Length: 310
Image 1 (tube, rainbow, N blue to C red):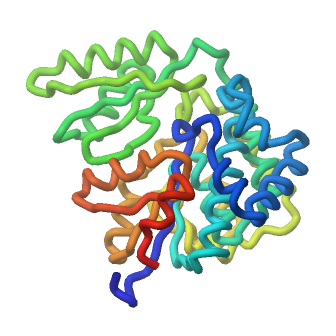
Image 2: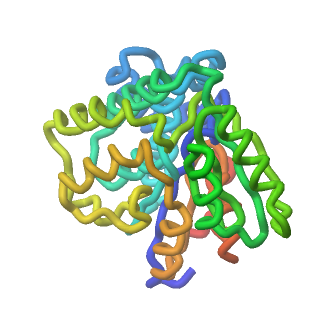
Image 3: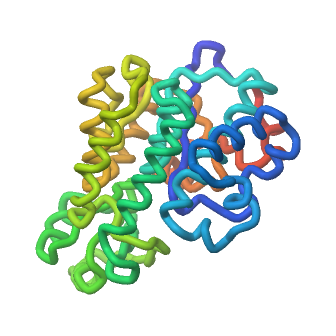
């Protein structure tokens, strides 16, 4: 590793969770137990039970979001304490942006846990389970602007622009199915689709009811290190946050209804010649970066930390 090469840490969001996530960190490092204790107190329930034992609750967005955030911060805490990990930049995919903001010192862990628990509940309540859907569209030469045009014809949104060859459609289930059929029927496109296992159409117009209560909750946080957010990527803009608290709150609120501009986020880090490390219970971001021809490292367990050259 070039000693002058900045380190960027990125965090996956929903979909990376698995029962037992971060348990090995909790068992090996006292610092990780402290993270789970603080997060559990903020959430009002035992997050070790949700992460390690309760698959039913871990499948629910309301519990899933604080659980993933807590597991990722616990893993990062161990890496900082025992491997001397120091990063200059942070990013996160969807929910992972909140982990990144905690990692950068913008939000406290307790405040972030309370916010994402509310965010998860609001997202789930916005559309009854089973009524919404998200489907990934995969094509070697994906034209995301063309995909947006198709989506608009069926009142569907591009929820995530994940990689040069992948984006997701988000909306009501029947509308998404119709839009996917139109994409596959387009001459010369030969796109594939994968139905995502999600409980609501995230990052779409159907999340509009999330915005007002989420904005109110963000405004109510007493201490926000907004200036530190210049080191954190915004899913909403695909660029780094400005350092303004008003801009930070606006971007986080709009993130719920807007496309996750992950391709732009990745390019920001690549343009800075960053060494990139993914920290989380899964490693979906590794595949997204590979679409840019960029290899990144991943930590998903205590065992994988030995592979790092720090």
